[in-house]
Length: 367
Image (cartoon, rainbow, N blue to C red; front, top):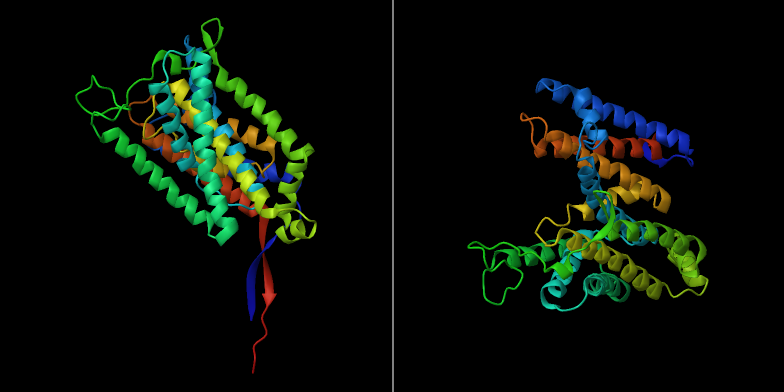
């Protein structure tokens, strides 16, 4: 009796892999074009506005670039951070929770540390965010190392716990809750004092936030860390085989905890930078980067340069879809989310097809 089973293809060339991705994108854009045409919208106009993030013919195009960079920075840093843990086969699905606790910690500093210069306050916000997120990740790694808990389930549950925490803070109007705007009749998160709001480098009307420069520096730092340092080499060995790492005398538990702390702390940094650039926090401050970052890291094959490029493309897709949707009254941001989902699903399917193939397997019958 003939059966089929999945087998991994031999290592694919970059050209072949990109060809699969291109086919997936073309198919998804075709599906989107049909949906757009059914709503009476010219698909070419919509896609043109999407891919240019609404800059063409817009005298305030610099505002679109600023908005795009605010989407890109947290996604890029989170994706790079998740790539660190995934590289050693530690399945950190808790990016959302780590981002939220980092944002909350940054807000605590912003609201309570006053009288200091703006740069010092923002640095303290980022340090607090990194420590809180890093310790959360370290706790997960500790239980994994000591008790062999399932890190996927633990980090997944922490996402919801932290979401409930920030939801509680945003809806509980009490005297102790300094997170809320005291002037508002209904509970809403307050605006940070000026010292907690990030500035940037003025280039004409364009404001280049410091968070963008930090994100670019992190690309180089993480690349060097993984490729040229002892710690980076240890991560690769543990990811290939923890048994081999132990045989080579490496302290696997220590490597896992150290790497998970760094990974989670980087997500906390993304949260601190995002909170500071936004000037407030909210229940939706993550913009789902904890989930999208998983997709970006895998599409980038855990390679730092590829993750950086993929982050840019996904950010263009996210921001471009929403920007394009604002021009057409017949659709809203929900359609933008739908189109993003179709494109991401198509690309992931293309990645699966490029990675695996079906093979026949002969299964002899007994008797």
